Image (tube, rainbow, N blue to C red):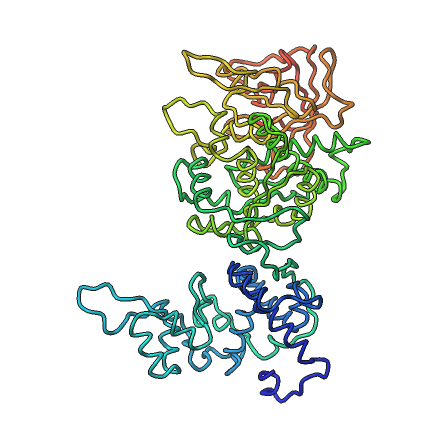
Length: 584
């Protein structure tokens, strides 16, 4: 209201006192939810219960305040998901005291044109004593606080000082640095139109309910999207985050490699390969190939079956959601069977905002876990959040891998199926951040077994865990051609004619186009091959003939690894590449 009057405009008549109150209270609620202050939000709910006209949609709040352009400005600079609307408005109002011109390099009054130091040193710290770190913004704030504020800052309690000035700095969040390189001041082109703007297209701010305190004291800020009835979110927790890090990396608090941090389940969008997922960098191929194989299986299982080469966007998205949810539910069912409990409980893990991976020290507080006792509810939730899991700049693959472990009952339950050789810690990631066979098996079969043979084997008193039942999709390995392993029938003869092929430390897929065209033991058949990492933009169709004759090759002739891998199942088969250059 003050901003409106200061700019010489009368308040619109529709802006009733009640309407102003609703928007102001919604701003506070959205800030508290964004920052995870669930106890404060619960106290607000108790003191000021939400009425039927309360605003609980972020999109509605943005449109009601007419700050679409402001939100779009933050979105273009990549911080819209991390910053609350209250912080955006506050920063813009502060800078609007002296608006920046597009052609000006000067900063508003009270702000340096270059980035201020993040902290100012307490001036009267004694020699040899570690000085208190006081945010520079709080130090400059003291000038307007009087003696009380100055004394508070001198005592090193800058949070209390800030609270006297309206709560500018709060514990538990990093305030946007108004003078820093990522601020609106540094971004430039900031004028009064950032605060008042009509509808701007393509402003995706997330439309989740931020107004409820029923998430509980441990609930982190929720990603966008509604949560179904009977599904309660909770925070991952620091102990669970450390245990997951130990299971994947062999130590708590480990950093993920960049190839994992920015990898979701997005499609390649090559017209000839509409079913194909896209892997951006090495390391994640085990998980992506497993999900790719399960996706093709879902297309086969559709009634009538869907052709992967002719599938529509809607059909492939539905199949992807079914593949992800189906894998999690299968893991939960296996875990329930192992524990002899009646009801499976699957988990889905989401990261805040647009699935950006939290820092290790913040993972426990910021990651959200949703638990399901219904396969249908799980699939609906995955389908609703599929755009988040698909983001190329998000950590959807990590979130899914975490969900697999939690659906299995946690890290200890996963380790129970892994071989304990004592030579090295049992982890789900190997050298260079590559997936282990255990992680692939967890996604495909529901258990993180270490071996590809059927059943368990005893080796000098040590149990070697293998595949317990026929897998939904299969696995073929080049290592079997070299004599290092023997893949059992439960993986070689899956329920659906789709195989994950493991060659040269990389996982890819080979599959029949339809279940009706399943391979035959006595005649030629076609298999299609897809490599998620190779930027493949054409169809690779192989004709495999188990009764055919192998071509004559010299001692130095190279044999495509894929051919040798396929021959571990179809002994001595001839492979025709149908005019495509063989992959060597």
